[in-house]
Amino acid sequence: MEVLPVVIGILALGIGAQVLAKRLRVPSVLFLIVIGVIVGPEGLGFVTIETFGGGLSTVVGLSVAIIIFDGAFHLRREKLERAPQAVRRLTTIGAAIAFVGTTVAVRFFLGTDWDVAALIGALLIATGPTVVTPILEVITVRDHVETALEAEGIINDVTAAVLAIVIFEAFVVGGAPSRIPVGFLQRLTAGIGIGVVVAVAVWYLLVEVKAPAGDAPQIARLVSLTGALVSFGLAESVFPETGVAAAATTGLVLGNLDLPHREEILEFNRDLTLVVLSFVFISLAALIDFGSLLGLGLGGIAVVVAVTLFVRPVLVALSATDRQFSREERQFLSFVGPRGIIPASVATLFAIELEAAGQFEAAQTLAGTVFLVIFLTVVIQAGFARQIAEYFEVIPMPAIIIGGGRVGRALARRLEKRGENVVLVDEDEDVVEALRRDGYTAVHGDGTSPETLREASVERAQIVVATTADDDANLLVSQLARTTFDVETVVARVNEPGNVDAFETLGVRAIDVASATAWSLDNEIERPALAHWMTELGEGHDAQEITVTASDLGGSTIAELDAEIPDGVIVAVIARDGETYVPGADTVLEEGDKVTFLGREDAVGTAVRRFHPHD
Image (cartoon, rainbow, N blue to C red; front, side):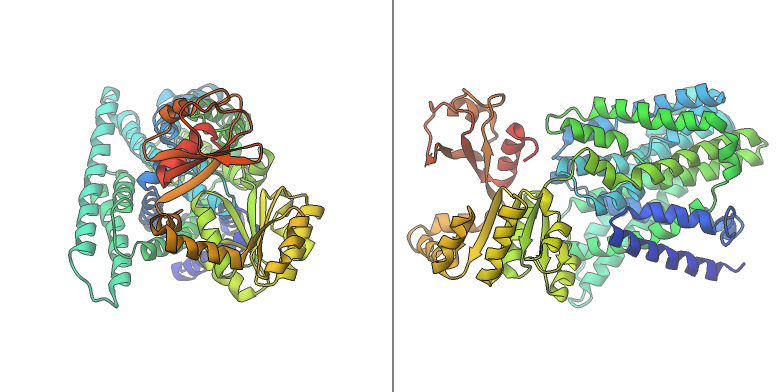
């Protein structure tokens, strides 16, 4: 069969799967791997290992470079600082436990030689952005959980690829096993070094070489993409399987530099990632040999059980030890660790080389075990990630905003910047589409309808805000939220001052637009410095409130609290028994007090997470 119709068919099916996944709120990799099986040799035979000849590994390699680059580009320093200890442990102690635990499980349950078991163990360290990114696109988790999953996927992909090739050369091709640590560091250093050099070159071209104004965004997108591919290709020409390290490094460095047209680059990378992800997953899924999988027997199932239900929970328990991770979040991380493209592509390459060397049984065991773990973890862990998240209740309670106009959008931007799970509701389909294009979660429908509110998950909502220009609509929304769905906090925009009493009778926090505007103007006249500072909340500055619990702060003085919070943040006010006042250094905190932190955004966030990890 000609290659062109196959490629077009794969891309069409892949994009269709992406659209369907977004509609159903299911990770796209589940559909992609099922499609791959259907069109592969075990199904319709549309795609076989002979379809692409020897070019598949090259195409997969370049696709992986794009996916890894995109994932690393998102890992900015401030994001990594949300869970620094967990990231360090997942990529060191966690990776080591995954390697050793998987190796022992393969050796014990499948009876392979230690060299093949170690090779499989190295490959299955990886989770990877190819499976993590689709999961995080359809479920919302708190920032530190998202950071842990993303960083683990990127960094452990690199570790798995480099360690696997070193073990393969030492044990299978022939060499000294004692040189594995040296070979690992040598290749890792080479990949990182090349990635840094290419990143600096890309930065120089984008910042110092002035492009024509009209073409600058397009040039920025193309230069950054070229940087990812060049770093991958250069590293692969020096040491095989180090291209992943180079592409990841290039993305990580560029992502943390001040680049022009950063948002355009991000959007372009994400769109391109969806395309290549579709192609790679369907193509590789088509290469699954069910004969090899079934040939593993119960031993293969035992390996999957050991890796997913024992090794993974142990490494998470020893890695996610930060107090900000709740027990439920650790459980979620324990049951969501699907394997992705890196182990699949490298295992295919190694299996071919093993067969060429006459080691047919080792080749079948390697490919069969790796693909079995990938297939089952993608189907179960990635496919049911939303259900797992809901079972462990790790999806933050949503803040629902009725009205996607200027007020609703501005409020959503501020809430999302603080890490809230925001859902916007609007009855104008064009407004909803615009919100979705800008990355917001939006529901199309009448906000005064109970069915629409249920679709927006009002039964789980922590807060409902009515922001429309119609007081009658806002009042009906407030009434439904308070009386029908028992939402604890309801806030409403009131456009006519005479309507405030009707809202307050329902126990709704009513924001009188006229009074709020007058208050803002008065502040601008009488206290301009404070007014300017307040307008920057969420843009470098922040004010957040926590409730004192006996276990954390009850009985402490303000002086003791000040000693535990970072520089750049102060305790502004305390609310107690309906009164709000500025505390003194010797004020003793009581359970139930509401403490407001004021200061730099990062410092306020650190203070809140120190005492209320899940706020």
